[in-house]
Image (cartoon, rainbow, N blue to C red; front, side, top):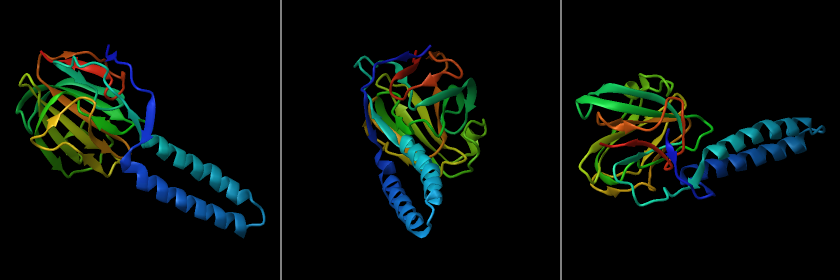
Length: 230
């Protein structure tokens, strides 16, 4: 089972959601004022406030950005979960876009209620960043990893091992943000990117990697150790 390291109990709102939350709140307040003043009965206002207030709270929850530290400097050969969610794939696959060889694929599906910030899964140097336009299949479907809009990030660890981290858009997701830059050093604890509204993150690891999570297991980004490289 995946090991979890104690995290900081601090929450903030991710910068990707600031404009969305502010403008939507302003629009809801404006509509609420109109309803309050237009109808003699305030029932339409209360119905609107309950329904759309709840929706706004869901969106607020979506843009949470917990401040997390892995908790130890001993990260040699460790692969840490890049996202909150549930493990939906652990299998040996043929990776034909970059490695052209068999790899162990571990996929984490993020629901609407998960934090959607993504973290670097390993320390190392960013070797490649490549965005691909594509379809918007439901993120948990196998073909999503091949046909959906995605961004591939290849990272070389200090030991010289290349791993591929793939951000995949889902049926609702229409925007992948990637902060990783080719040639830059990267570290566990740093944000790799952000995906809006339902998505997944795939990891392609070398054969022989010791996988430390199980199918359907819940992961916590930058906390759950999901594998140890050989």
